[in-house]
Amino acid sequence: MNTKTLHIIGAGLAGSEAAWQAAIRGIRVIIHEMKPHKFSPAHKNAACAELVCSNSLRSDDAEHNAVGLMHQEMRMSGSLIMEAADSCKVPAGGALAVDRDAFAAYITNKLQHHPNISFEIGEIENLPDETFGRTIIATGPLTGEKLSSSIMAEIGNQALSFYDAIAPVVYKDSINMNIAWYQSRYDKGDSQDYINCPLNEEQYYTFVDRLLNAEKVQFHDFEKPNYFDGCLPIEVMAERGRDTLLYGPMKPVGLTNPHTGKHAFAVVQLRQDNFADTLRNMVGFQTKMKYGAQQEIFRTIPGLENAEFARLGGIHKNTFIKSPLLLDEYLRLKSRPHISFAGQITGCEGYIESAAVGLLSGYFAAEELRGNIPLLPPETTSFGAMLGHLHDVTDIENYQPMNINFGIFPDIRGEITANGKFRKIKGMERKTAYCRRAVADIAPWIKEMKKNIDFQPK
Image (cartoon, rainbow, N blue to C red; front, side, top):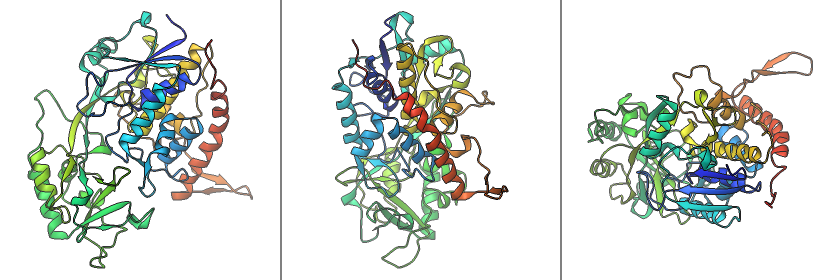
């Protein structure tokens, strides 16, 4: 076993971040990536860290939002993913959106030019044995069938699956701006961040009826769709009630139509998808409808009657393991501790969560290879809370993917005032308290975890 080499299978966000964290600590890293030899159903770009949505990194508010807090912790930790995101961001109000191609190219370039990192192109089809070397599996939610089967043979019937859908992207110049208008909800961020298409009451309910009656992608008899609630197809949301979309992606609050001076009954928002602002992503419109149905139905939305689509929505199967049962606190497979897992295959949900778990896995493996005991992040931080979800949950049988959220942090009910009395805090004040506690608590951990950065191999 080569104790100074780390093999990473998969160059998505988790694998890329893990490789970077190990390489900057002096570990030789070999990234095994099947692209461009082979692509998953959801990926088209041969570069590393490919995103399917420009706003995949979500809120950048580190004072009131758990996702924004995770951004901050990653920046403090020397994250390559956050470095790339900050360099490739596009306007999106309070969200961190990026030019997807520039983002992937930035990360690929950094990895390819690091002296400690090399690539081996080709698909790994079997779970590596110990002679292969220290390994991180970061193949994501679309792990190939052969490797999935090999993993299943090792862990038994302890893997679950759900279905994830992606939203259509529209060419901006095909949007009718005589009907649509620019405005961010509640005027947050820049006024150009979002384009809004209004629907009146009749148009909205007609649209919902069309969604419900549209031709959908059919599943095989042996497949049972089990969607993650954070990424439901638009038509599945509509099936939960004809008004559901009014409280989700089509909610009209915080917007006023300048063409009429009135509030619309419902709206469809389109977010900037690239630097040049030639593409717009239909926010929350991930779908499993067939392509023909998508074009027909989405063109009934006022302002999109002549829409040209750069990408139509799609659907793919995601797979994850029961990490709390199978992995230790350092994300190592208990039955084969030379193997770690990272990213969405572990049951963290979302790109930024995947990158954060990749950061932790890369740091843990690097310190282990250097003969050190890695320091676990405090449970009061976004890193610690996410790690807790992957390792320490009570209901393992019903384990499900999870985004970072304050619900998995140690609770904050209130504070002791100057006169010694307990005062409850809630709402925005409580969220701020979570964020400030996390930033204070993670600082000593980051100081320790950064000690071996820039160590050069002999």
